[in-house]
Length: 134
Image 1 (cartoon, rainbow, N blue to C red):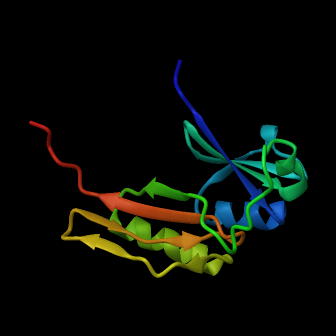
Image 2: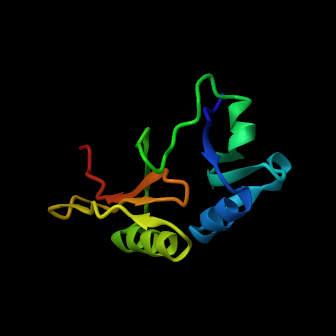
């Protein structure tokens, strides 16, 4: 069986978050979406489930974190190039995201940026040069 990952994120406004994530180039699986939830397709095996706070509380074993004040996780996403990293950052900033001002450039080997979505969830798009394993 192929493993899949569904990252569940509490959001204050599903409509706003749908617009944000689709602006980053992701799509929405409408089969698993409604007025309080949306299934954001990141790749064939990775999905972000955005759930309005009340809906998220139905699943969460503890109170919902105030992600505008604390960082509970970092979501690192691979990109196909340095330019793709910068494009994702630009799209995030143009659609309500915040630049975390934490660029990373390790001598041409790895390049990344960091932004927060409108609800404060931290994403780190990065590009890494693939090394031959001969």
